[in-house]
Length: 322
Image 1 (cartoon, rainbow, N blue to C red):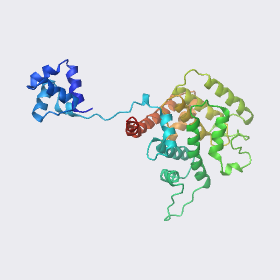
Image 2: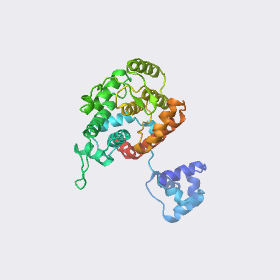
Image 3: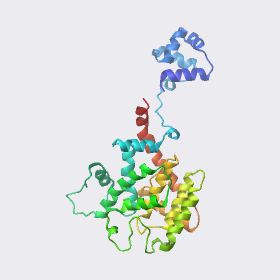
Image 4: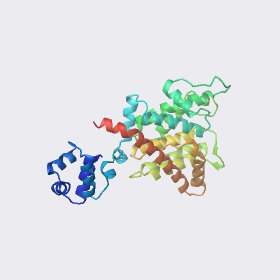
């Protein structure tokens, strides 16, 4: 808002008519009408008189409020799909691809930097430093490229019901071409055949996975209205089952993002810098049934993604609403 809107709002707040304001500052009522419509602007003398008559300051009258994105009216899934379809660079879809791939893979030990991740996404090539002798694991590169594809698949299917076959497809896309495809016991796109663990926590035995995932999905999908706490709860229980030989954390975090989009909830990306809080939250959720730490960590990540949405979509939604 600018001077014209601020003037009208303040005048109406103190229940003063245009005629009354005109009389107070010594002009015709039509002049006030032109000020409020934006046709004319008062000179500094009249502006000072208006501020005094309305019992406010010149600064308050002329201040410009920043456009604020009403996130409750934003359909992020539609925007991501549109930007994906148009291959739009430098906005929320681009940001999500790079930020998500870097952080979720780095949490699991990827050696790629965020700059390298962005370079792979933008140029389909790897940025290297010729001045240092360093090595990058091929699996880190494959899983970064695969994650970009997985995000696209997730966006295409985000509004669909979460199913066992979709979760397996997530895993198949993430691990395609990696060394796990040739490792004995690593079933790409299928549940684990060898027992695994998360730190000191035991996970479901291989012969129990299918049953436990089925029960988890049935209970989750039976909810009439999904809240962010339900999505976090599903994640904690999914990670406790740990259905795949490898890649469980990344698949679990992708499911959370998908389910937020499906239920019109602001999604979130767990950042690598917060991984200790995230791990602690998962441990407490599973071991002591203390849910608050993981929920708070996820809500903090949600606030960070919300700020990114407000930054990127302010100009984007304004442009597309013209």
